[in-house]
Length: 306
Ligand code: HEC
Ligand code: HEC
Ligand code: HEC
Ligand code: HEC
Ligand code: HEC
Ligand code: HEC
Ligand code: HEC
Ligand code: HEC
Ligand code: HEC
Ligand code: HEC
Image 1 (cartoon, rainbow, N blue to C red):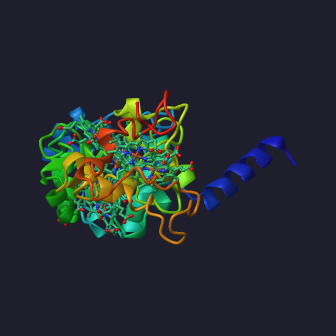
Image 2 (cartoon, rainbow, N blue to C red):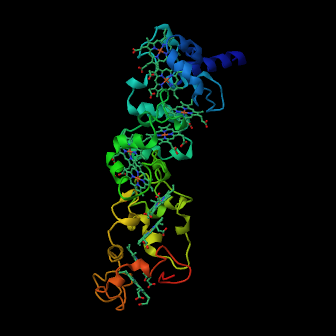
Image 3 (cartoon, rainbow, N blue to C red):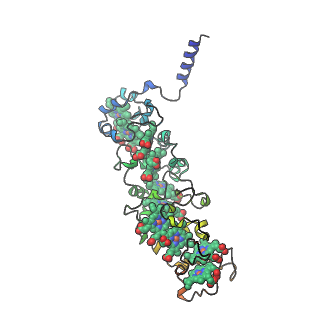
């Protein structure tokens, strides 16, 4: 066969079976201005104004049509919701796919399809607003805390407790500890903590990003901190008890483990008991951390006394 003929035959076959819309169905962003002036005129501020997502400037990757699909048929029909990718008409799954076409490769969203949000049909447009975001950063629908509180109202109350992280005050964000796009749980604790808790450096808890003095490694580690994790003793959002502790008095936290239950009077379950010198009827012994001051780990003393 003539080589040129073969070339056109292959090209034709490709066009017939193509999954993606052909270039001729695209019309460019400028025509949208006439009928959607509000959206169009504010779009120059949008990070999607010049989309360089795939390193091309093809119509499928730039301007309005990069999200709304080819617009020629829509313009010829003088509008309509059925002639274009109208987000208001689409099921959640299609919205997710639309955005992930370009945003699937970023690390912060690598786990998104398995996240509690995706599984519950909370998708990109539930949190992001492309055209009406009041916060220029990350195109959120509203400021971050109010956004999350619309669906998690109980959490607002937790951050109003006497001992708390100052999220409501604007000092911290939910995303200092969470990745709302879904986070791989820290490897050593994944079974008990699938709650989109983000990781700090490597696989450690996000708490270490700020409380770096608790990071260690210490010569003498307290397994409760190193193995079980910060939430064994602390409530991360807020607590009625000082220091975000789970229980009102320190010794009740400690005695959850150092109690001798099971094998009374001996070393039970690998956890050391307090010695007889610890007289629990003596109030002096109830504030354990007045002596065991390095409770998160020590470089000097195996019993965390200094
Ligand atoms: C990054 C993807 C994206 C791009 C690019 C984009 N849009 Fe949208 N558009 C959306 C989403 C998502 C919605 C649904 C409403 C929302 O979430 O803000 C929407 C909604 C709309 C609506 C419905 C009315 C409204 O205001 O909600 C119109 C009209 C529209 N877009 C036109 C345009 C035009 C014109 C352009 C180019 C100037 C454009 N869009 C570029 C994602 C995009
Ligand atoms: C000739 C006028 C006209 C032009 C040009 C035009 N549109 Fe539209 N568009 C309309 C009308 C009318 C509707 C229907 C609104 C309705 O039904 O509420 C519409 C609806 C839409 C919607 C659906 C909005 C929704 O509620 O979800 C989107 C998205 C949209 N247009 C995007 C575009 C884009 C992108 C372009 C440029 C490629 C464009 N339009 C060009 C007139 C136009
Ligand atoms: C054609 C590719 C493409 C599509 C489709 C697309 N985006 Fe983007 N998006 C980009 C590019 C490119 C940027 C700019 C990245 C940068 O500046 O580093 C961006 C930036 C963003 C940002 C970050 C803004 C900031 O302040 O950092 C958000 C949020 C976003 N997109 C959400 C969405 C959502 C939601 C959708 C689906 C409605 C979507 N995108 C669809 C390419 C795309
Ligand atoms: C449950 C709410 C929520 C959902 C669902 C969501 N996002 Fe986000 N997204 C956020 C928040 C909050 C931030 C701001 C993170 C920050 O400030 O550190 C953000 C940031 C971003 C950014 C910019 C910064 C970054 O992390 O890269 C992009 C891009 C983005 N989101 C895209 C998407 C896309 C695409 C989807 C859907 C596939 C999506 N988001 C779904 C809440 C959400
Ligand atoms: C549109 C509603 C909606 C918004 C907005 C929203 N969430 Fe969610 N979130 C849900 C649903 C639904 C679930 C799954 C059911 C559940 O566990 O409550 C969920 C689950 C979670 C979980 C996991 C809970 C668990 O038990 O595993 C965390 C953490 C979370 N969201 C944090 C956030 C953060 C942070 C934001 C703000 C950036 C946010 N959410 C915004 C609806 C939402
Ligand atoms: C200081 C770190 C930190 C901050 C800030 C934070 N969280 Fe959490 N959050 C956690 C940890 C850790 C867990 C897991 C607790 C557990 O498994 O016992 C959690 C659990 C959750 C859960 C699931 C359990 C529940 O209580 O229902 C939701 C939902 C949640 N957070 C939402 C939010 C929202 C919304 C914000 C912002 C307003 C936020 N978190 C801010 C650390 C934080
Ligand atoms: C973004 C930085 C940041 C992250 C991440 C963070 N914290 Fe904090 N934390 C603070 C600051 C700042 C304070 C000081 C208290 C305040 O805000 O008034 C604090 C205070 C505390 C306190 C003492 C409260 C008191 O009353 O003295 C505890 C306990 C605590 N954090 C535990 C945690 C745990 C557990 C995590 C992880 C789930 C965590 N923090 C993650 C910044 C952070
Ligand atoms: C075995 C229980 C336990 C574990 C696990 C634990 N803590 Fe604590 N933490 C305490 C106690 C008890 C106090 C109060 C000490 C006091 O009042 O003398 C405290 C106090 C704090 C304080 C405030 C005082 C200070 O030392 O800065 C911070 C911050 C803190 N913890 C962070 C963390 C972080 C981060 C983790 C995880 C790496 C963690 N804690 C794990 C028991 C624990
Ligand atoms: C989640 C369980 C748990 C909690 C809660 C806990 N511990 Fe521990 N602790 C351990 C384990 C496990 C060891 C290691 C025992 C061993 O190596 O023999 C340990 C070791 C110790 C040691 C050193 C013992 C030795 O023989 O060297 C001291 C002291 C100690 N804990 C004090 C405390 C105090 C004080 C609290 C309360 C603030 C507390 N622990 C809370 C599990 C816990
Ligand atoms: C007045 C200071 C003081 C207080 C308060 C105190 N301890 Fe101790 N603890 C010590 C000293 C000193 C040792 C090491 C010598 C010894 O064995 O008596 C020790 C040792 C331990 C050991 C290691 C086992 C052993 O006998 O060597 C554990 C576990 C322990 N303490 C837990 C606790 C708990 C839990 C509390 C709170 C209910 C507490 N301690 C309160 C001073 C104190």
